[in-house]
Length: 355
Ligand code: PLP
Ligand code: COI
Image 1 (tube, helix red, strand yellow):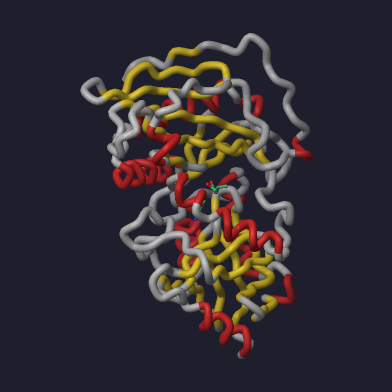
Image 2: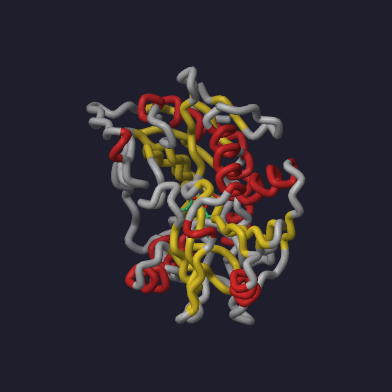
């Protein structure tokens, strides 16, 4: 692998107070870039001062959303060291997304080097306060400057990072979720299983409507029957119904969440029955009515494990676990964050030390 060339910023920014961090707003001093050209492969890996990209106005990414991204975090442990959680899973998922969008595969070694070298250089930006971390956003864009609808031969992979606190203003308090019955996020055969910008663009209208009604995010239904639940805007969902854990199966239109995968593993370690299957919204409303909908939560890198306190669809509305965090949700949150911040053992080898 080519050596990563580092150009340091002439002046460094003032770092924000850890207690006032807002998700995704405080970018650090540097970013990682590497170019890809067909015939030449990946070349010129470099870390440069953070700043605007120069993009041709005809670049495919600007017109046809030829973009994929990932989200992961670097965590500060009690002894001051820095570690990543399941980074190879993120790199694998980026390459799965690349496959769907006809973008080139990035060698795991190169993506890993870009991420770890940037985190090492920005290590003073990894916050110390409880529940804070450095969010890492790798992304890949198609840059061919031509308006024909074709995949690009010139591509860039970029990594930017920013210190973050809780994703939701609610913190670990339960969020209110609205079941969207008009717009759909994805259908099988589309791009729902890929982490690509277009999915999020298509979600904005429903998200705005839900926010106006006082809800935090929407819960998407499947695009064919409009009846089976899929996932929330930035997280997968799980329900505890009559002692069992239910979560939608990875049917081709749901993002295969890495936090989802981790929670399923932990729940199985603890002896829970976990059913990955189709779940209709009606099944959840019925369970709420007969008192068996015990807990609901979302899972995601940014959102971690977020309790869901209220689910609504049209004029139906149910409150879950008295709008309080339930015991399984709390245990998952504690165990997962315990592993991420190095407070508890890591039996599944999910952690990679950076420095
Ligand atoms: N679903 C969607 C649509 C997301 O954007 C995310 C966030 O990455 C997730 C689920 C959760 O995935 P992960 O746990 O890998 O962060
Ligand atoms: C993440 O959890 O990393 C995400 O990508 C969610 C994001 C859309 C805010």
